[in-house]
Image (cartoon, rainbow, N blue to C red):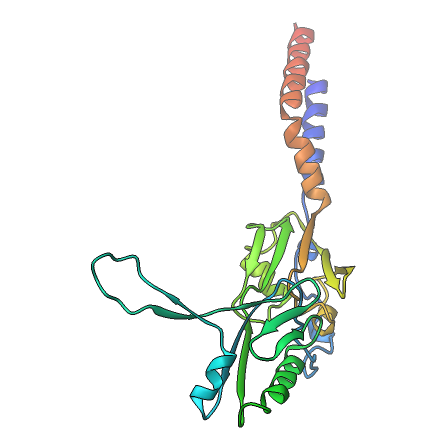
Length: 257
């Protein structure tokens, strides 16, 4: 019986070692004492290589603006019937050098530049051909990758160009109970160089940092905490614990006789 009590005590200690406190899983714990409210962050969307840009040029003279818009016609696969082709705007792929080929204007460098600056530059060039040109531009393939201890890891896409870190984690199903909230790894490519930043979600100061808003192709990795490591080790050794408990129980019954 003495050995049985020792074994049960060991089991309780193993269970308690896998428990985690609420302090380790709560977000924004210092939000009441922080200076987040009232502060602002100037966020600008930067154009990067492999971005797909939808650029639409319009003017009071619609016919004059037509040469500056890439259009294609898609005919439905219906035989024996006459259908008008469907108009669809083509998109501009930013190449590795950061360039796009724009109708009439030719090669234009947009890589690494803020979206607003690109729009202003295009507008100035088009004034030579159009009166009061209007330009609309959107990034059509904005995406980030979320890996690690989240409920739905994978590529997160967004139709918006302003995606925050909390929004991306929410779209990935939020962190699991085993995710490290105080050590989120963000990998970002900035002007051809890799940049790594560690972010503490239990504190609110990151809201005012350049990493609150995500950039195209950012990688977010959520590390597992010690509870996950202990849990994984314990679960892998369950057959061993069962065999060991059987041996101890057999020895206890043997000595009792």
